[in-house]
Structures are given as structure tokens and as C-alpha cells.
Length: 219
Image 1 (cartoon, one colour):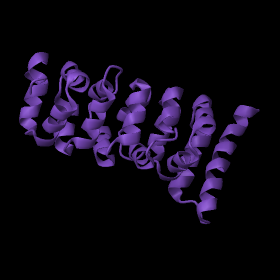
Image 2 (image 1 turned 60 degrees about the vertical axis):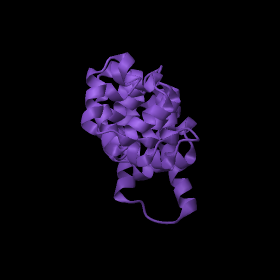
Image 3 (image 1 turned 180 degrees about the vertical axis):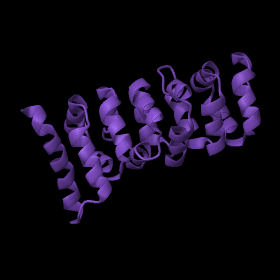
Image 4 (image 1 turned 135 degrees about the vertical axis):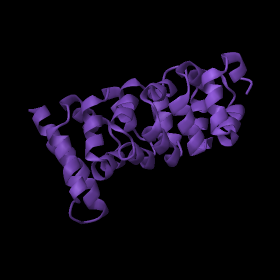
């Protein structure tokens, strides 16, 4: 019985918050996201969203999300990581980016492979435009590497706030996974920020594919 009522709870919960803000008809996208929540989500993931989500973030998910990406989140995510993505402290603009600009495979990767603390840091502190670049351009293996345990949170946030879009895209599409991990786990924030702000993309690609680990940390 409880599981059967969950979809109705979710819709009522989010709709109630929206009504308090303004009285209006639901948009076609809002109708579509609610259909996804009711008919396509996994019960345990829907339960996670209802029980643990910040109300404002839940409204973002049910108002602005691409329904196909919301379906990915509500069918493929690890419950703990879905809860992290909806927890207080996450930047609503970044959640909106993740649910509108990601590819299905990159969103699934973030919600199944990421270290919880790194996922929270990315969604709480990233520049929204750079997060959009990461989630729309990255190779899934490299995105998983950037979010894996052992990456230093300060270095990840440096990459997601100090990069140029083209340097971030280069790092997340052309690097060798082991060299990307070295850069995000052993570099100093100052050197990483300088590299991602000033580097020529061709040179950056060479450094992240052909350098030794020792030399990479000197660049």
C-alpha cells in the first residue's frame, strides 16, 4: 500500500510547493515529468526522492527536467547517489543543468559511478556552464575517473570553476584515464587552475596522453 501511494505523494508534494509560489496550469514538460515519476520510476528510487529530497530541488526536477533524463535518474541511479543529488546544499541551477544538458550515458555514470562527496561537491560548487560542458562532452570513462574516490575535491572544483570550456572538454575527452586521475589527485590547485585557464588545447591533449606522471605534475 505504501509503495502504491508513493507516486501520488510525490506529485502532490511537488505540486503543492509550486502552487504556493504561483497559481498556474502545469506546462507540458511538467506533465511529462510527472508521468515519468508515476509510470516509469523504480519504487525504491521514487521512495528516495520522496523521503530525502530538498523540496526546492524536487520541484526543479519535476518542473524543468528533460523527461528522458529524469527517467534515467529514476531508473538507473544508485539510491544513495540520487539522494545526494537532491540533498540540501546542491545548487538548483546545477541540478537543472544535470537534468537538461547531460547525455543519458553521462548522467547515468554520475549517478552510478561517482564518489558521493565528489558528486555533492560538483553539484554544489561547479560553474553551471562548465558542468554543462562536462556532462554534454565527456567520455563516460573519463567522467567516472574525474568523480572516483581518490580525486581531491578541491582539484575537482578547480576544474569545474577555473577551466575554459574548451580545456575542460579536452581533458574529459582526450586524456588517458590514469593521467587525468593524477592531475585531479596530485596536482596543486594553483598549477591545475593555470593549466586549465591558459593552456593551448593541443598542448593540453599531448600532456594528458603522452606525459609521464612525474612530468605531468611539473607542467
